Image (tube, rainbow, N blue to C red; front, side):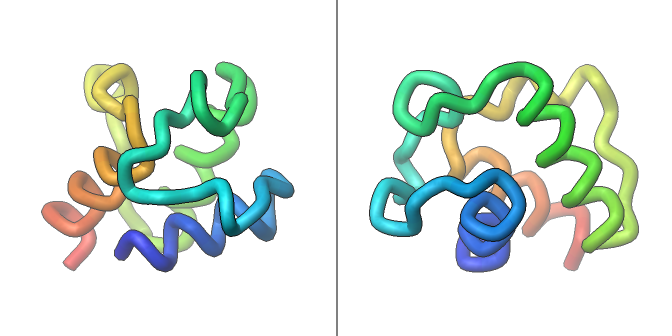
Length: 75
């Protein structure tokens, strides 16, 4: 799942692949703003055919957090 999230970040948000690790913080390390985070959530919802609630989004601090959540609900 981590690789799929990394792929989305590279292709859709133009983040360099070498900058992304599971420990990378979305905001402080990768520079993602709130609009880009919303885009990432929408992309994940579409790609994995799931719905991500607003109450969950604020828990997405690192790339690993997103991958862990999606692993739980999408597989």
